Length: 379
Ligand SMILES: [Ca+2]
Ligand SMILES: [Ca+2]
Ligand SMILES: [Ca+2]
Image (cartoon, rainbow, N blue to C red; front, side, top):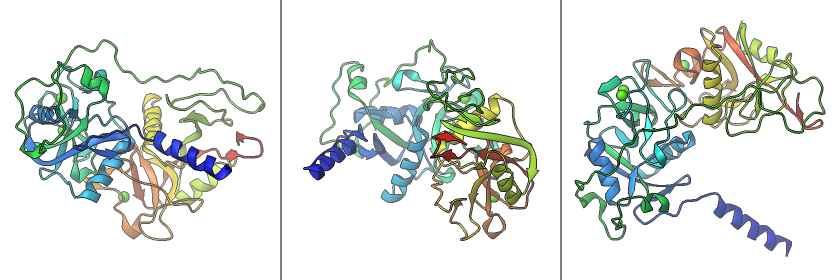
């Protein structure tokens, strides 16, 4: 009976992990329903029309973890875009420099880390009023670039939700029996840009209330930077970001091994485990917004000392370093140092994307407080 209950619960949880209910024209990627049209070579407007014909819109890639899902799907199914890039549903046509998603009430696409790639070491978007449409670039691990909207690229479509279907002009979408590649793009305007009324600014606060955890006396005022995680109490000097505690030692310029020791001497911390793109984005935004920037970068707790190309955290566990965590040097994807570069840092000149570096290089130090299972506090 007990095991049956567990199985039932597992089924519930498993089905709850995905909200996708994809029609036959779309494939489940993460929690989304996407259709890859790698060979169409359409300008951005025609690509949107093509998606509209099959009951979708150009994809809203507003979750950085979806980039890894897309890259993995492309690799597994051989749907690399023949043009080198996929159009997605973001544009700054309405207001130069402000990129919005054409679905989901035109929410804003944030600039910087971790969504955007580089061209010749210059951060995208870089095209000003000449480049107003957003594409995911095959040779940049599907990071975003702004591109001239008239360029002919592949289309990455996303199935409309019921709500999105309901708000269209009333024409029902036919999703059965359509051979997508034979569909002729319609001439109707598939979307309407309207003035956004509420700027989608980053919400950060250094004065969020701390709820409950008052049992420890040597903690500082909680600062909290993520909009998705609850703030936590952190040791002296550490800052709460993404529900974890970090210490930025911008003046401690030293080798990776020395940096590791420095963290252990600061409340028994460790070099930071930058293990997902949401955290990388939050850390980069915190550094930019607080104008804390070393000239070089921050050592973090990832290395490939033991086996070249196998990156591990300092506790020996494998580091899940899927796109979009790694940066670029001269348009070449990091890590690029082979046996000469075995330690990982967040590099200031690359908007804090990850690079492998010479472990003897002198960089600043990013520590993370360890969780104490006895006290149930970060220590
Ligand atoms: Ca532009
Ligand atoms: Ca560009
Ligand atoms: Ca490197």
